[in-house]
Length: 426
Image (cartoon, rainbow, N blue to C red):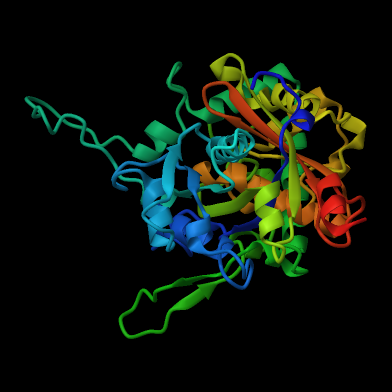
């Protein structure tokens, strides 16, 4: 579509948006595979209690992000869809754009609807970082002599730059040096993110976006448990301990990135349903949550992936025809605290508009899920704050980023979209 503004294209609406709780690494959701988590999110977003007039066969296509696909079986998106009860006729594509995978899934879903290829599409993503296997790369040909190794698939395919072979944390350190962001600023930002997430969790602000998941008991004969909340925000915050943690990647005294001022390894899934205007007109009982206003992708040098959202977000706003000052809320994925701080600085944004319910440092960052997760959370922020326009941006390994701009159409929000006004005769 090039740079064509979406105002000249058929509108696309989000009618359902949910996510699982986010579990800690080897934590509350570790017994669930990425397929199980993804299936649960899709099943919840298409559930009768959310969309009573939607039938499984109405969903024509699924775009689903997944980064760490080893040992999951063919086409994880297809498995998630069929296990969620969607019919065999559903077209399914798995997307791997590293951390931006599920944001790109939403973009592809919107483009699919705008081009008239489908009228109802599920987009999202899933990841179980707890269940990524180790590899035996020499097994097929045989290990002829000496010691062998077991590369960690999580580290190799999720957290290591493919070009420099450096851990992504070292590129976060590069970002801190490039933009003169000290350790203290990163720690204080992480503390603020954690406090926002804890408040959002304890006050129920996140409850509407989370679909609780039943987890079998570890001990035989015991009843299953229900995971209803994100795991990390339930852990008491020890600010002194956070500030005292040793740097994780540079240990010569100059390091600034630590485990608690970076996003934790996590498990989770998210899903959204996107539909056309004609689909809404044919399903009067379905009320839209938001309209897709625009999107963009961006890329620069692989080691500079941390600041790629500062390019993608202005491109997305331009695509949407929205001025920066007219955006009510932003979500910028906190791969590291320094990522959020650097992009705030480059974009000239006030933190009061960004990650208002906490970010990935506090909630977690299941790679293939996170782009959709921040969009689901953004819709909740706009609903609670009665905001009209929101923008979600996320960086991805290899130097890239994706961003999506939405207009809030939820009841009680400020400003109805033109499509909804037209349908409701306002």
